[in-house]
Length: 136
Image (cartoon, rainbow, N blue to C red; front, side, top):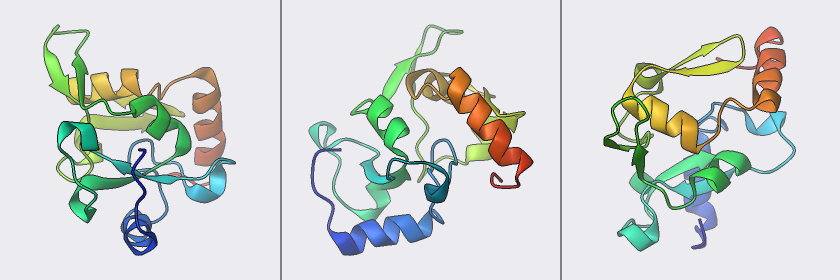
């Protein structure tokens, strides 16, 4: 989050994500705050500023995630990795239903909790975007 990502690499990450946050799926055009290149594995945890370790993230997802890479799953009480956009498939861990991002797995649960996907404001925004055909 704090290390500067070169412009060409940032553009590559943005194109690969089709301008959508790779965590919550919100499009760059649908929010006021800019999307950013997120270090999936933070520099302080040994992550590198390379394409395979970068995800396109909306401002809120990037801030809530911070340098976190795992959390305690509330159902199993086990340490569980957060969703990793380069290794995991979004649809394996989450379902979008009436604006709410529902977790399907332990990875989905910890990511949903840490990134605070389902605040009232986020659910309402996604409902409106779904109705307008702006979310996949």
